[in-house]
Length: 309
Image (cartoon, rainbow, N blue to C red; front, side, top):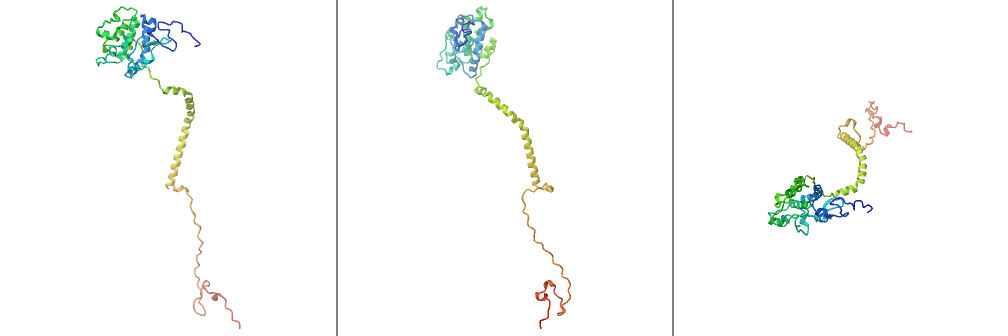
């Protein structure tokens, strides 16, 4: 790395973790000696709550919180070691850690139910160790004979009585006597806590395609501008179809349009009427009326000439 700023400079009792690694609290002398300031303990707890709350939202518990499984990064932020982010029910090893595990993790009896209050016991045991410098007595020993002395009765003037009372409540032997949820614990300590959200698989894709998406948006803007013109053209087409149907139905007969070719018949031959017959004089020879010129035979029409003698 080109810069080593801060790597060798003490930043407090939780500093000194190697880059990109977690340093367990049990490996930090300041934490094992006790007397860690109240504000630092609350900050440590607020770092751990989001991942634990997300686990509890899935009806799971961690079940293995201790000075060995809580680590500090190079920025003095607290984390559970990566393997403990997995729920206890899906881990191969589930051996309770003496001093930090509640009694229900040692028992399968329905009288000792497991739940968020089980992790609350472990968190309060960690806070107890950071205050006193030693862990509480193992839960099976307390079950046989509880010699626990409440922190609020020890006259620890460095800490507020309310803070010490919350630790005492979280270390109650009976699950029902402890805070029931991490939100309850956070409220009692006066710290903010919110469940850690699972990463959205769509988010990286959206980020990686941000530029194409912006380009597509810009390309769609002119298209939106053409929509009124398309609507107008559609209206004109519908009006034209209505006018066509109106004329086709015969309602527009006074101004009917020719919609198909028509075959025009040829004109028939002209027929001239016959003139009425004119009155004629009777034939002198026979006494009968003479035939009209049109009805005469060729012999009758030819002029009479005397026969050659």
